[in-house]
Image (cartoon, rainbow, N blue to C red; front, side, top):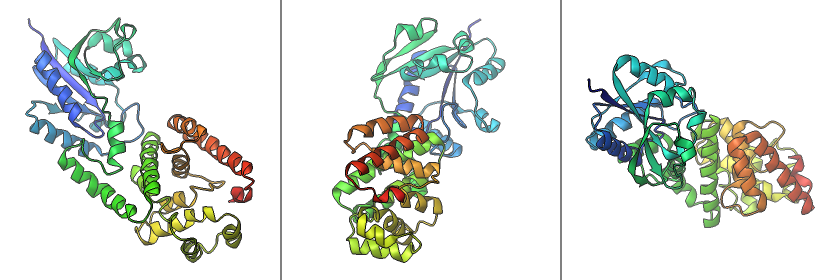
Length: 367
């Protein structure tokens, strides 16, 4: 009896993009499955949050496979469970439903490298035939595949990850997502509209720094399960008043933050920190930001404070260690932040304190 071929494609698809579709088309062409099933994750075991809701991701996938003329169904198993679902659970369900079938599973060569970290790894390699999509920079090493039943797609695909696309999206670049998704994202986050407005208010150098801060802050928010929209606005507006004349910064800080201790002393000894308060004011009055957590993150991004939320720490760390920062410790802080935002914050704060002491500027350690 000939076994049916079941092809499954699982992932967060956050966001779905053109490489996902190309890989799926190539996998279908290679094995000619009897049935193709797509499993969007409700919440990936390796992630704390998603940029798009489940339904936003599902509806985008539907439109993309329709446009590509791909015959596939989308399975809501994970969504119905409303919790993290591991691949072995999906495979177990499929084996019950599709008796006497071969189950093929699409995986990138980058994920193949980490396959041994997956739950019930031995169960997976005993019950799946892996379809490996090679990605640039991620070679298939023999030690990764010695016990795995797999087939490899001919092409090597661009190293275009969802992580990179998210970073592009939050600086207003929607080139790698379909038009209908670009419209949805702009309506949801107002990214291009906000960035266009910011560009008119700050210098080119400051604008470049702002974009790099946005990239890091939104990525760290995504990693830590923090509202990405909040991280975007806090990062986008953290330096919005820094290029304003000092007199205007003082006026803004005094008018809307009258309770700042020793404000006159700040003006006299450390005027360079005024922009964190004046920027929060601009965010509130000009950009109509009402969320207190966003305004707080902006108003603490230079001096920090004893009580810092995770969002506060993300903006503080992103400002000091964005890609445009060239001092030695910046890369170290940035890499640490991806692993542990709390530790990265402490290193960033201590780095800033050492710099201040070296410059004999002890004043604003108190703020």
